[in-house]
Amino acid sequence: MPRTTARRTKALAVVAESHPPVVPKARRTLNFGGKWEYAPAPESVVVKPDAQYELFIGGKFRAPESGVYFPSINPANEKMLATIAHGSAKDVDAAVAAARKALAGPWGKMSGAERGKYLFRIARIIQERARELAVLETLDGGKPIKESRDFDLPQAAANFFYYAGWADKLQYAFPGRTARAVGVCGQIIPWNFPLLMAAWKLAPALACGNTVVLKPAETTSITAMHLARILQEAELPEGVVNIVSGAGDTGRALVEHPGVDKIAFTGSTEVGKWIAKATAGTAKKLTLELGGKAAHIVFDDAPIDQAVEGVVNGIFFNQGHVCCAGSRLFVQEGIYSAVLRRLRDRIATLRVGDPLDKNSDIGAINSRAQLEKIRSLVDAGVAEGGELMQPACALPAKGFWFPPSVITGVTASHRIAQEEIFGPVLSVLTFRTPEEAVERANNTPYGLSAGVWTEKGSKIFKTIAKLRAGVVWANTYNKFDPASPFGGYKESGFGREGGIHGLANYVRLE
Ligand code: NAP
Ligand code: MG
Image (tube, rainbow, N blue to C red; front, side, top):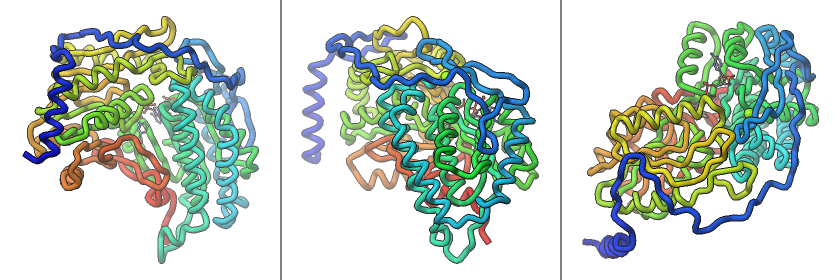
């Protein structure tokens, strides 16, 4: 036995003595919390959303043609934050016309260097307003402030900075070819990273000289409308970006509009499939970033504490409202009980509560509908024979909450191992050989991301070569950089966002 393995085995034996054996029971409740209590640390920047948000078309805010508005609530307390304009097919038509007009105007003739200056300006204003935007994101979406402040906002600005740098260098991105704008792009985004998804979509499109009609998600439109103000402040020519809030029918009108040259969609696989059908046989270009069912593979030579921390971060980050959330954990049999003990101890220390408290690790579930979906999949997991472990944490009386949850005894055929849950729920499975791990990890309709944990570099490369996933992290998880492409295999979609690959979606090459 190599010396390192011997040392690790000994260390594990000590841990095993100091913990009670894991005897999973259905729906057992753990109580490891309460050792340390943090004093409340509410965010000090107080931001009040506007009472009402209008549509942003042709550089101006205007009421929806139908006069219809819908409420946006704070999912942490169910209080109404604002009313949001519901854009109809007529509003979408006006937005597409404004985008077409802008394309024929100065924007369409502008040099890449000039376009880049607008993007740099937008990036800088986002940075300046980061705190205020982070608070609005947390109020409207329910994610912890430490996440919107430390992840969403810096990443949103970084994407504009990154693509600003490409605007005058497209000839180097596509050597020997001339890159022309695609035209009017319809962009439809989900609720899990509202401002960041807008940045992912807008920045490359504008760098390549396109104009855009953006449709934010129904439950999280507020930061998109504040972004519209930033675009005004940056003096982006009118009509280059139009933002039409609304519901599914607004998105549908955008997809079906004959004046749109490209659709970029991030959202569920179900809606993505409908969009693929609706655009088939048309001249519209299409990119789809859809759901995921990511697997972690933890080999028995992995650094266990680091792996558990990465797995916890990968599923409980943003309440599991992440398309690349690692919702399946495959553990090599020999270390199963050691991993499970550490997982159990770690989830008991996660703080669930007020998203505006800087100490909260897990905030509110984005909507009642999403909470119901999580509950029904967890119930199905237990009904199919899984054992549910949840820490005993007190959840607020109002709002939508779900505790961090681990389900053991899951098999590949269980719904919980196959369907995207989009919540803070981790299913644990085991494997014996590397071949079995890869086969089981690949056994879903999705293929967005995966995590591999081992101390052997060769094992990392062998494993990732066989994993059918667009992004594989090794000995880390959920690391993002605007220069790295991101996207899926199989039913997780096609096309890449981020990096030089992200430019390719927004150009026609001549
Ligand atoms: P969703 O229901 O598909 O909605 C996504 C967006 O599409 C929303 O703006 C939605 O509007 C709109 N929409 C709904 N029906 C439409 C239709 N028929 N035509 C055009 N647009 C339509 O997804 P979601 O529940 O908001 O988001 C969660 C999903 O997004 C998850 O499956 C997750 O994996 C995926 N996601 C993927 C990535 C990735 O990069 N691969 C990133 C983030 C999220 P309303 O909000 O008004 O319904
Ligand atoms: Mg909301």
